[in-house]
Length: 246
Ligand SMILES: NC(=O)c1ccc[n+]([C@@H]2O[C@H](COP(=O)([O-])OP(=O)(O)OC[C@H]3O[C@@H](n4cnc5c(N)ncnc54)[C@H](OP(=O)(O)O)[C@@H]3O)[C@@H](O)[C@H]2O)c1
Image (cartoon, rainbow, N blue to C red; front, side):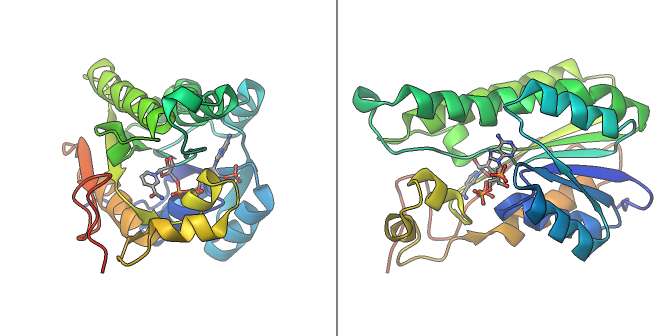
């Protein structure tokens, strides 16, 4: 095991859910953590709690990503947690703006932030990229076309990076969770809390902390160990549609 003493970790999507929990787990592992998201006031509160830093970041805005990179000349870990789903429409009724947003955040966001920070990760000596993918990156379900297409795309980006970074001191890991109780469903259903609550009805989902624990585990392995891909689901979930509800 190697801890994070003296090393900096950036978490995107740190204002909520898996990102916020990862700020805490990485901080507990000894990293100096930079929490970044659009709702920077939430990141500032979290940074105060863990003794880290907060930065405003919109991964869909190239200028915002460039400004982030200027602040981080050397980096040990990037956790890409910014992302999510928007809508639950079948392809026949797909809304262009939903798909564009999902691609911008889940796919282009990961590409832009990675591209901007690769030099800083290489400078750090033992860089680590964690991509929060999803079970939706390898499976599909009706109504999930836009989200599953985006998460399949980011799965491909992760596999591509693994090949492109071979021989460099940068590891990469994709963490692919099933149902996690965060603001994810509320965002997907455009603020409809009743509909969002149904996603987790009658079953025990993963918590953001469960996923963040795994992220901290993965990045604290010795430098010769790269845990490429982790699929994790609640015990009551076998696939996107196969959920046992009491
Ligand atoms: N919850 C699940 O069931 C589940 C399962 C599998 C995978 N995932 C994935 O896990 C990741 C984290 O989601 P979550 O479950 O923690 O949901 P969440 O609580 O809704 O958090 C999503 C985070 O993404 C950030 N974000 C969204 N758009 C952004 C943008 N343009 N620029 C910067 N940050 C942005 C949000 O911050 P701001 O709005 O403040 O910018 C927020 O911090 C996502 O990639 C999601 O697809 C979730």
